[in-house]
Structure formats: structure tokens, C-alpha cells
Image 1 (cartoon, rainbow, N blue to C red):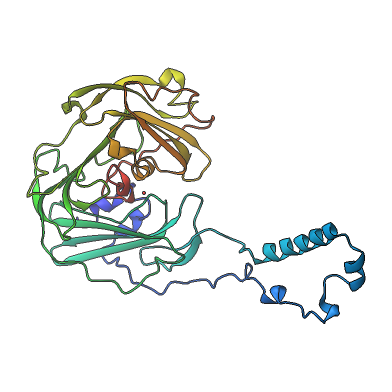
Image 2: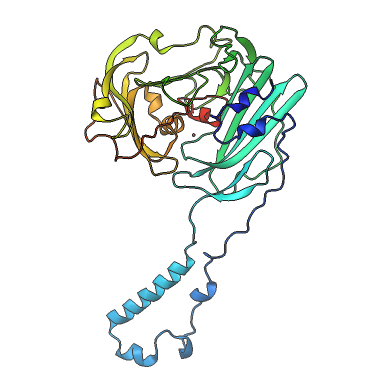
Length: 395
């Protein structure tokens, strides 16, 4: 029971196989940090001044200085400067972060393009007197922010926290603070992992942080997709966009976040897109690229619902940086932030987002970005996965 939900593939950075053993606790081993490379070190000897009366160290002989044109001297000095500067530039400019899964030895990794932060993600579970902790570290896209989330699944309490930082090796293991045992806001809690949300079997959950809100997270996607999701989660959380609501829907997907600040304010029946009334706006909808998913024939107008009264168009590349895609649909103004799109659609490179007011204002002009195999894997599993860390709520 304790590790049942950890098999969810949505936890992109926590291997499901690591969660199957109750005894799996992060041991906090000393990371195997490689020494900084000296290849980019700038030699002070290259910049040392030459004594004025020491002609043997001069780059130009006295004769050359007399006969050389001023422009020739300038060219030679510029060439020398280029050599010095080139030597002094570090060989690599990418951010370096600690990378490790669970209790494995930690290594240093250089972050890929678009990943400008280091992250530390912690999954904790409690059941009776047993406690499980799994820690992962690595790189994260620049839209990521600190966040927390917790919920109940039967007798198990699950807590997710993620912190980010922006300097080299800033996510190295350090003696941590004890998990807060405070009791703050009381919220309704359930999860689709055990069908408690769908069956109306909510439980009460005490938030552990004073900054947390009661939250309801919805992630629904087309039944044709191969990635299964846990569409509903209720509990406590401190997420980007809280308090308030944020959401997006197309003709294929529906993402929604509700945050509120009074006791059990997130209780009641789960939210369904069809239960939201049309708001009178229409937007073009598609997900994919110009070859499949967002071709001219596959792009259509849809009726926007609820608070999603802006038209969104987002284009970018996947995490590997070699597959293009486009997303169009209806969104709230808060959804138009980069972190929501990047986390929900796993796009971190060359991300471009535009939202506009007025029916059909996201009409395609030049079609979706360049041809390529269809790629738009929505990170739909909330909570149980790092993806969660980036829906309307949250990368």
C-alpha cells in the first residue's frame, strides 16, 4: 500500500522501480563531485606586464616598432588580445548541478539548453509508524519555482516538495531541516490513484506549511493517448498561481487548478469540463506539428468554457531540443505563464507563448513549426510525479 502509487510513470525523475521496496530511504551519501575543470583557467602569466626596459620580452622588436605602420601595430596587438581572451574563456558555460536518484551516488551533470536551474525533489510517505523518503536531484527548466503538495490515499499521506536554485552545484546534499509537523489549514483530500475522488470518498488533511492552500487539480486528456493519467487530486499545496484558478483546454486536453483559503473549500464533486458553461468565446485548437496534430485540416474552432476566455498559442521544442510542436486552445490569463506550458507539455527549449483576447485570435498563420514526427506527450499525472510540478499550477 505504501508504494502502490509510486509506479506511476509520470514521475519523470523518480524511477518507479525504486519505490517498490519499503526500506528505500535516501541515505544522504557524500556526492562524488568532480573537481572543477582547469581547461578554462586564465593564466596570469599571459597578462603579466613586460618591463619597459626589457626588450627581450617585447612582442615587437625595436626595429619593428620603428618601421611598422600604426595600423599594423594595432592589428598585431588585437591578434594577441584575441589569443589571450580565447585562452581565458571557460571551455563550458553550462550550469552544473548534482544529479542522483534516490540513494544512489551523486554525480555532476552539465545542464542542457533551456535548463538553467538545479532542483531537489523529495517524495515522502507516511503510513502508521512507517515513513518512506525518496530524494532526486538534477537540472530543471528556468520557469520552475519552489512548490509543495500533499494528499491522502487511504491510510497513506503523500508529500511532494521541490526546491530550485541557480548557481553551480547549489543542490548538493546538505543537512536538512526536519519535516514540519505544524497543523494549519484543513482541506478535503482524495486521488484518482485509488478512485476516491471519483467515488466521492474524501478525507480530511491538515496542511503542514502556513503558506499552503486547499487545492483541486484536474488533468484530463484524450482517451486515444498512450499515457494514462490520474485525472483528479485534492489536498494541500503551495503552487504558482495560488490562490485563484488557472486552466487550459483544447479539443484533446483539460488542465485546471483551483486554490482556496478556508476550511474544506476544495470539497464536493470533482470538476468536469462539460460542467463549465460556455463563455461566448471561441479559439482555434490543436496539439502537434504541421505533419500530424496541428496541420491545417486538424485545426478547428472550439467553444471556450468557464474562466478560460483567452486564446493561447505555444510553440517550442521538446526536452531533447529536436522535435517541434504547437499547442492551441482556450486558457485563463494565468495559464499563459511559461512555467505552466513548459511543465504541462514538457517543452523547455525555444518556448514561445502568446495569448490574445477575441474569438479566433489564435488563428494559425504560417502553420505549425517545421515537419517532424508527432510529439506532444502531455504530462498529465499530477501529484504522483514530477510533472505535477508544473501544470496550471506549476517544470
